[in-house]
Image 1 (cartoon, rainbow, N blue to C red):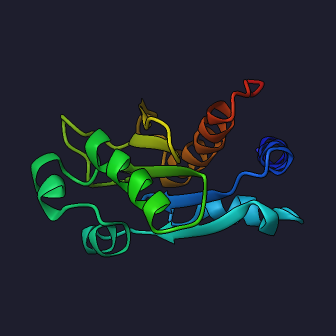
Image 2: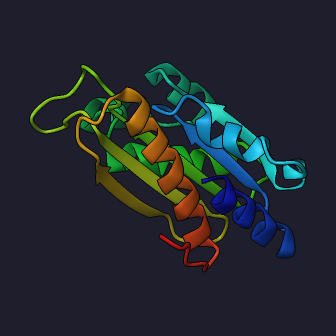
Length: 163
């Protein structure tokens, strides 16, 4: 995962792009991985850990009504988080993650292991994805989420990460 993150940072440096993260279920692990790499300060503009619904609204401008209508773990909220992170930063590319890492908190409609992602690029369209990892355990769901967030950022740059 570190090699993919390093490749992402190198690719962003090459085209002078800055990244912002908006994280819920990962609690800052995406930003943590990126900033663990020397030289990341030239790419990582900032990161938001918006674990509560209030933080999503206050920090990222996610409408409370959107959360009430769709739930915090939804495509709509993931999109709003990524777009809000761009508005609240000087970055060019934003990734957001919101999900249910477990062990509890899931339902039939939104099971443990469901994570919604969004990628927003300044001046571009927002891309959304959802992954259902299953009930792999809290740590594994979070780690898989980090890896897929890095992959989504690389995809947003037009790169195709190796499996």
